[in-house]
Structure formats: C-alpha cells, structure tokens
Image (cartoon, rainbow, N blue to C red; front, side, top):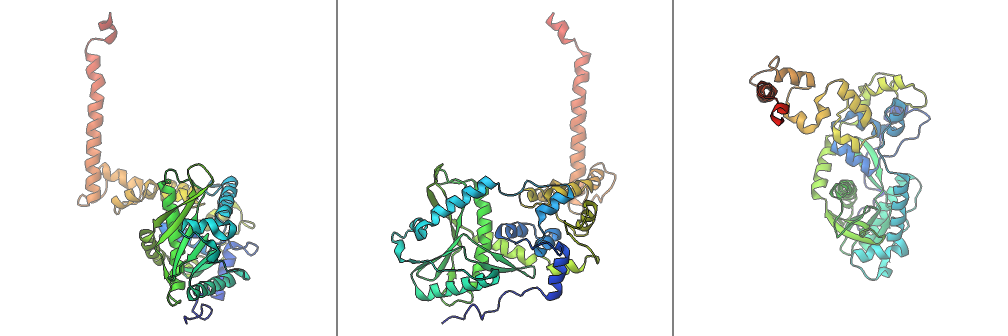
Length: 389
C-alpha cells in the first residue's frame, strides 16, 4: 500500500506574511490571477525575468496591468478559438472518453473507469486527484482522469495546474493528454504550435512526477498524447510527442527562478500594482522597481511584452535585439556602447566582442566607400542619354 497523498508532504504554502504582501501588491480588491501551465512554460523559458516571476507569483492580472500602462497586448486566445477548442475537446471526451481511448489503442471503452474529481477549491481538487491516481494504480486496468488538478511549487509558491486529461495504464504508467484545436494535416502539425504544446505538457509531466514519487508502482510517461483535428475536419487524430528535452529544460529553468519572497522583500514599502487604485504614472513607477529581462520572444508569451520592449528600446538595451545578440556582445550592454566600440571610440581592444565589432565596422566603412565610388565613375564617363542618341 502506497502512502496516502493526503498525508504526503505537499508543496510549501506561502507564509501568512508573504500572502499579505502579495495581496498588497495585486490590490486588496483584486482576486489572484491563476498561474497555468502555459504561463509556467513561458516563465521557465525566461527565468531571469524577476518582473514576471513576481507578478505571476502575486497573481497580478498582467493583461489589465498592460492596459493600464498604456501598452495593451494582443497576447491571448480569441473567443472564437476558445469556443472551437472547447467544442473539439468535448467531442474527444464524449461517451466516457470513447474516442480518446480509441486513439490510445483501446477498442472497449466500457472497461475504462472515469472517477469523479469534484472537491472544494484547488487544494481539495489536487488532493482528490492524487487519491484517484493512487486508487487507479492499485485497481489496475485503464482509468481516465478528466481535467485533474495538479500542484507544483514554483519560486516558493504553489501553482495549481489542470491538464486536459491523464490516462492511467494497467502497468501503472501515467500519460498526459493534450487536446489542441490546431489541425494535423497529413499527420503533421505546425512545428511552432507543437513545440508550445510540448513545453506546456512538460509542466504537467513535472507536476505528475511529484505525485508518482509518493505512489508505489506508478511511473510517468515522458511522451504525451497530442490530440488535434485531422486535416481540416473536426475528427480527432493523435500523435505521440516526446517531451524529455522540454522536461529537462523546464525542470532546470524553474529551479533557477528567484523566490517570490526575495523579490518582494527587495521592493520599497508601499509599492503596489493595484490597477483599480493607481494611476498610469504610479503603475509605471511600481513596475520599474522590478528588473525585467526582455527578449523578442516575450512578444508571443507575455502580456507586458510591449511595455518592456519600449523601456528596453528607450534604455538602448541590447536585449531588445535578441538573446543570441546579447550573448555575443559580452560586457557591452547598450547599443551606444556597441556603436562606440565599433567606431574604435571605446572598449577593450583585447575583448573578442570589441575586436569583432571593430572589424565589422572597418568592413562596413570599406563597403560604403566602394559603393560611393560607383556614381563618381559613372559621371566621369559619357552620359547614358548621349549614348542612346
């Protein structure tokens, strides 16, 4: 008999003082914005961004904050796409998950158990899910968990996650199921969308591993089942996606995140992101108190990306040009420093980045000089209209 998930040590909850501080940051009247797997995957992709770590940890609604700052973001899913996704998911799970189990290779869905996961609050649902997973392993056979609730500690705070489904196999193996509404044409889907789905599923796998570690006979598959519409129909088809690489990256990056209480403790007293009580100028000043790590990739993953991009450009930060460029420039942190180094006005000549910039500057000057000599040579010769005559 495995240890009961109720008695197993859960992720540490924030202290009372930290909960109060986070409530002050988002505003006393604001409900905490839930942190989902998509946000966690984006956070793991940019672990150096303390601004996002704090805002997500405090449950601040970043869309409302971006709107109040005057930099609204188009990031998010349209209402039409949301409704289409819900309709497709309902079709996949209809009749007790008959179609979904067929995609897993099981022709007799009558043998599949679908436990009730209803419980009060996210903590209760997470405990009920852990108990259902343990009971499924002990009972054997196939079990389908529809929208289970998982919990994962992130930067010292618990994040509650809700995958589309988890299937328990007779051998005790757990498989995450991701249901997406983008099409799979000729057994192939858009690589960028599949990559995003894999990063999101890796967060679910990581959360499941914590439960499996306290459940005898359980293991978590490192391949997830991605279910999408076939071609341009509404018929579901599936593909097995290996997420071992995404899992390794996510685990490492989440471990690098600064703890929320450490970031909050560094803020001056009275700083708040309360959209209802603060003006745009006050919110801008509050946001600027928290360091950010903007990169162009943020535009597809963060609601505050436009605001951070504007600030990065105003500061002349090289991060605005991309992480790869930032990595190649070493200690040169602003575009002004880069241009000065390229002109030979600043920088250590022994620095490889400075040497490369000066070489590039010399090549550019040589190319411009060569290009500038062409018109002069042409004006010295016969005019084209004279030749035509």
